[in-house]
Amino acid sequence: MTGDRRFTDVVEAEGAGARLDQWLARRLPELSRMRVQALIAAGRALVDGRAVKAAHRVQAGEQVEVAIPPPARDGLEPEAVPLRVVFEDAHVLVVDKPAGMVTHPGAGRIDGTLAAAALAHAPEMAGVGSPRRPGIVHRLDKGTSGLIVLAKTQAAYDGLTAQLARRTVSRRYLALAQGAMRRPEGMVDAPIGRDPRSRVRMAVVAEGRGKRAITRYRVLERFGTGASAVTLVECRLETGRTHQIRVHLASLGHPLLGDDTYRGRRAAPAGDPALADLASALEGVALHAVALAFAHPVTGAPMSFACPSPDRIERIVSHLRNRSR
Image (tube, rainbow, N blue to C red; front, side):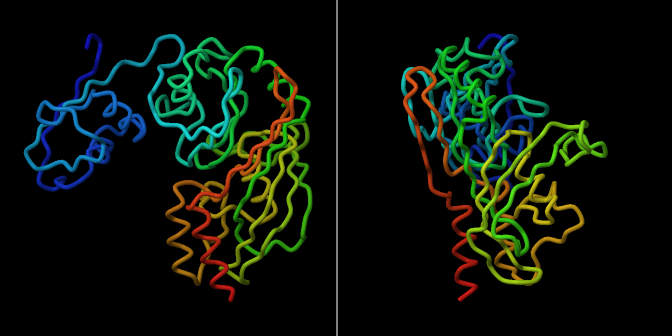
């Protein structure tokens, strides 16, 4: 196809037996695995001249060809990536985002995003909000899973952003934090800004140097003591700053499991190899947006959604409960 970038390679003996999407992802590091899977699903990846599925096991000597379209100059390129749709009508789309998916294009990631997948699902979103972030009114970190609402019309976009500004959107999260949190509940009211020592980190900063950030938390369960202690905590956001829950809990001395960015000098959980393995398999951080509520931006009807914790987190909770018996 005109303008496509062509990738061609032959499967070596060492790569034989791998899934096609995994094999390609290793050779095309600039593309996310979801983007690779979308190209395969669209018939843009051929093995010995024929279209196959992402799960195809490549064999030594097979020739793999991929046609990679150029990024859109204006707006966002739709990507046919499956979505876990929780609710949809003519105005809003509520999705259960998996960990590992970026909400919208940003520095270092231009494909495999929720915004691009939503645009393929609902092309009418193209003119809603920002051209590079169509329909996006709030975001979840790449390593966070759970509920997020997108606007399909400009009226919905305006209504939802107004509710977020008034702090009338309810967002509830479940998190697994390192250590045994002593207080059963509390509130962190501490401004968040860019960490002056790192461009990729946020931090609690002095008043006037960041934006006000408020997180309310409640302990649900405590597991163990000492170096392998973990706390299951519910967090409610009153504001929506970048990495807010991660930064606020880390400021209390309780970084999230799997969050190397904000663990600081605190060592990873020790004394429980199984917990360490489960934490390393999180594919993100132990944070899940479990509930979301807002007024329908057009009809005004109350909307409330919940989705259970994913297996990646439930496996850890199950292990911790069994360990405590």
